[in-house]
Length: 255
Ligand code: NDP
Image 1: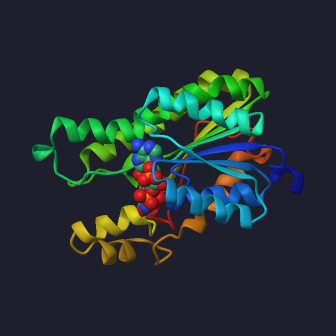
Image 2: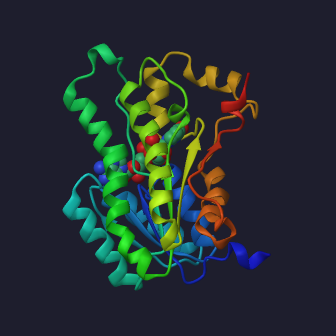
């Protein structure tokens, strides 16, 4: 059965792969044999991530790209194809949050979060589709959130974008099944990253509330995403499509 998880010869694009959960997923796929294109805006972070992946024996490149810019996204996919000859796996992970209740959120803030978290997944998926089809199939992994399921006072636009990710995932899964492209979402629980360092600074008592509600009794680590990414990127998941899988230490099933 080990061959079912082998990613040798496969090429993965990971948006926001230069840190946090994206780097955790990139490590998992690299260790299973994939070459990885690390996509982000911060060149220094991307260089460090490429070093990290290369030290693990993987082929990796950094591509500077703002995933909200359609032309830059098209060029990013072309650069990946030029460097590695194909695209098999796309991880739509880049994301951010602006924490404000709905009555004070500005239209510009709404649009910034929606564009970064949801429109970017549309742009990258559309740009990578033909390359994956040419490769004979592919895997798209979209990153949702517990706020794909739940609501909260301080993140209306983040929750809307992450709810949208799940519905977008289902539609792409149906549309691209005939092309042998599987499309799934991962819903992370509370994970220790730069994003949640900011949340813990802004939301009173968040750290302890998460610990109290999580059956695993800990915050998640970026390495918790290596296995699920390798699984959803590999032939082991060829009959899995349109799902949204929580990786949350049980947060979402706590009564
Ligand atoms: P980080 O802030 O550590 O990482 C976010 C990544 O997104 C960075 O690598 C950043 O790279 C990239 N990014 C942001 N905006 C853009 C952009 N416009 N263009 C290209 N890259 C961009 O956060 P996490 O690792 O925590 O988050 C990763 C994903 O997981 C996000 O979608 C987030 O919503 C989701 N998530 C996180 C949870 C958590 O608890 N941490 C929980 C649930 C979901 P750069 O700055 O170089 O552009």
